[in-house]
Image: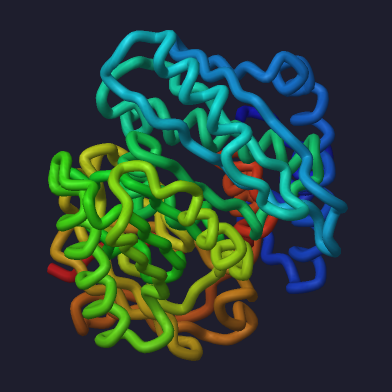
Length: 376
């Protein structure tokens, strides 16, 4: 997204990028800017939502949708449900897609079943998926009034493979995720610190050892939750009598998942980069040129103190908000135990504009940006 709202443009012309905003001014500007951004999105994206087709570059993602039940207080949740299939004929994947839209009934939701853009084995975790899902979520929030803190992803079989991968990779987008009958391949659960994750598998689902690796993933989450009380919430069930098809028993995960609301500004973050690189995760961002697969960053905010533990990258940007800490007070930032910043950080229009230009997500708009470098 490349637009700049009229409010921001006028504010930056009158005051300049470095003008400090009060908390009240920043909150008002976030609201005005999101309203303007939402109107722009509604105009620019209405046609693709009407056609139920999103195109980015050379990839096209069609989708089906259902509105289920009454709109709950706070706005409908969005449930993105990923079909199975994979490396097979297009007609087989089409059949799986058509089935997925009928498979679950998340109460009160806008329930969307996208059609994977490819017919490859990894159809739900290729690099193009992140951008397509970001755009779909933005569109649903702006056009359908979806609650941005109640967006969920789920999937069966190859769709479950995708949830294992993009659950952690896009954890800052999801309120919760549910994996059914998939395989994680190389995916790891560390980034799920703030994202509840359901795992279900048939006890006889031995192809690719799905039953074994699902249990192993659940055990990893058990250990992580024990080490980090209150984090890494998860739900695991194996059905001994079932093979790959769980006869809809897995639908029990849907109401469990819908109980959760996203933590948009969590106090603790673990960010493990996947083979598909991300540049923004909760209140952290990194330049694309410095991000690489396997990179791990631990970030904590306690009161007015932020601590970073990471050996790489060498620079980070902290995306700050009064939802995380008090920007009227001084903050201290340490990196691997060494102080790298101490002082006040100004709220400004530039941070708000940059947040909304990156992502149409009103809940995660930063009102201040702080660039920090690793200690020498």
